[in-house]
Image 1: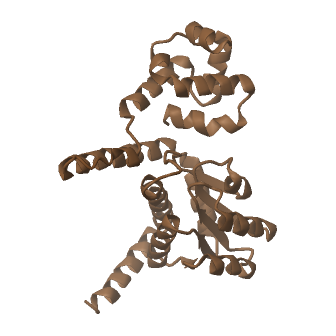
Image 2: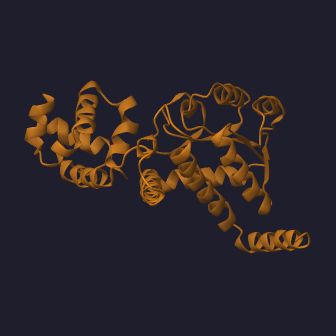
Image 3: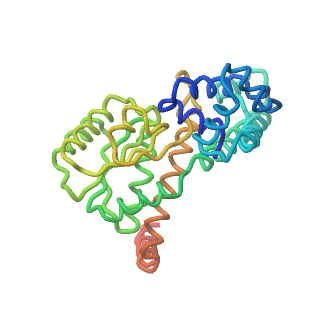
Length: 278
């Protein structure tokens, strides 16, 4: 998993000393690569043992492994998509930049994935009767994609593009249903309101969001994290949408693999029906 992502995701629950170390690493990535444990301890006004403890707290065996993973992040570092746009460039340059940007997003997303969290989410979805999907804007596009995939393999998925309809659906959900929220920021008012009521009704819930510690992440039973790499001011939900679609695909494959034979039959039948109108 990406070192930078691990640090960012851990900051909300770290101690004051660990937060100081984490912030220093994020702000001085290149310098940290050549620093020893003692040097970093001096720079952060902590101690070598604190540096080692910090490294282990965020999931590494020690400071050397942290630096190895940090080096990968530094080498893959790219400008935000908004910064890529240059009116003086030709289209070929723009294509190359967006290609590298998307590759970077894919690598960061897979670097953040916890296989056990995905497996737990798949099991929750398999056990559910109806799957209600919640998301607006770019996240709504992800919901529509997931709904289409689930319907093809026999899972009842319900998604209303209108946010008010999504909210009014909550009181009609049953105990064996599940709510899936897609929200990059994790603070969209409509999603927070729906999640609060879902929790109040004691209905299972999953969120695809940038942190399990944001407002939405704290309300759901299971949070699947995507990289928090987009600026507040952006052209569109580009990297977040791509990351969310990757998670949706993994959930879909996880569900489909549990009954491969019937999944295959259903996909063939849906293909045959569609072929009739072409």
